[in-house]
Image (cartoon, rainbow, N blue to C red; front, side, top):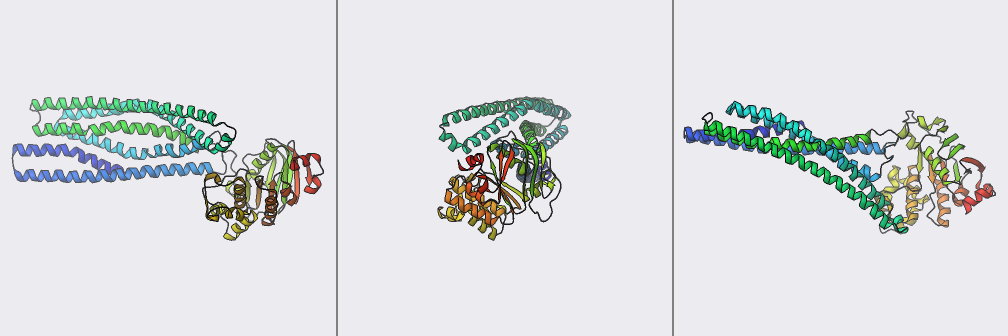
Length: 541
């Protein structure tokens, strides 16, 4: 940006020199008529044109580069904050809203890096023009030096409404993007219940609100630009009038009059650019406030700082945990154990998964990994040791193989995971097998295919502790039994907690814990627990 400012200043100095040189050429032609001197000054004028042309080109190029680099850095920081292990950013925000902040707002913040060198060069242009006019006439120079700060102050004052309305415009646009993304994600469900018209009306109202906010912001921008252009025009007319009177009185030569008029015309750009720059600053300030709000969002849980040992045994223990619908839950998953958890109330399962993933900290009791409270473990280390695979885990746009290997395991581990999850059956049904590119969130796959690919991805990550939630609800009974056997084989020696109501998965578990009314009511082998009527109604209904 410093280079862009320097080149911009050089360009403005060259622009200001042009009318002065034209005045010199005229005076030389009128006063002396010497062809040699005239040719010399014409050559100087041509050289100045070449220099200002090159400086303008490279100044704009460097300014644009700085703008895009700044926008990229803002987007990177936003992405890092959204993906941070301590969470908290998505609370109360739609995904489309965050996407809008990371695109439109980040771009507007980045454009400040383009506006700054242009503003600097405009100031240099005004100063050079004023000094040049002082050499022609003290009166004209002082007129510019007095009027320029006044115009700058007016530009800032008139830009305040634009700043407020730009903030509102971005808020409405972000909400519209969020609602659109939400509707697209739930399109199948909306069609299933016949709610397309209601959903369309909801988006229509949101979109109209966004359009009205954008129109109000555009009106403010038009008012700012129009007002500044009018004031600048009046100012330049005054400069031209004063210069003409000075020439008529003989205070300045004809060449100096031409130079003064040329300088007045030149000053139109740096003075009018103040309006454009101030508009960018107003929009940038509004967008920067929205970006800062995301970056400074408090974490969902306080960050931990303790490191885990190099080798994690995988003992998970909940002691009198109170969180969500859980009311004093105590259970233990021993190292290497395949533990099944059955929740009569789905809310209990959701609350259990939340504390195991440390999306929330329990309000009472403790959750430990190898004796260390989860709340004290550093976030990235905890995520590498404990993986909670949600029931509705999304797939990424890319090939099936890329999705499975996203955990970073070696080829052997990925192959073993795909065998366990029976992804080979999925590959045979796809046109390019494992290289078939699937759409975002795996929408191009059936529910069962999506579940098997997601299960293979979780298994391929091979964490010391894996928690899976209902990984087989969309597959047939035969495949379910095969998947249960595959999970047990791949996870041999590693701790696995399966939160499910599938008899096949529970039968493969070493032990099953039954939750009801937010507490553990029984524990044992699946074959023994089916004698309990409440348990039987949950897993066999």
